[in-house]
Length: 193
Image (cartoon, rainbow, N blue to C red; front, side, top):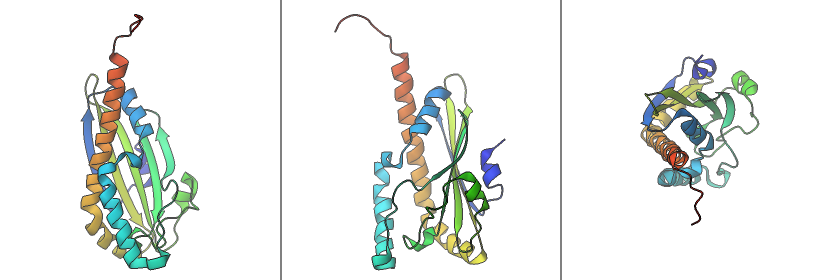
């Protein structure tokens, strides 16, 4: 079963990106599991620009996101991981995310008007001997018509940057997985150095 469809079968906004990595599935899975947004140094200007817009739009109400924003929702070991996020991202830091929703059950049940619900999915597929295709899916639904209109404006603004970040995520997973696969294939020697 596709976990993305379990949590969000009919997204209002979505994007998909994929990359074939020259590494076995277990190395790629470990790289996906170890992924951190801190690995995306090239995306720092995008995050900084968002913060500047947030400060300009919200003044002293602006809050930098704290802690882990993404909620682990589900995983199928070695195949799929799904994370969720709730918020009013179009406010650029003014009541951005909901930190009180921390599990799959409360995420699925959440329907408070004026919010967006997003999922970020990593999917792994075999792509030939020693190769793995990693797919990222981003899906978003909104909880009412007003949130949909706000999200549509926001999506038009951030969509190119979001796609760029997904490509950086895939490149980070690629680097980690190939490094791990390479290290695993190096001959071990017991000779003193």
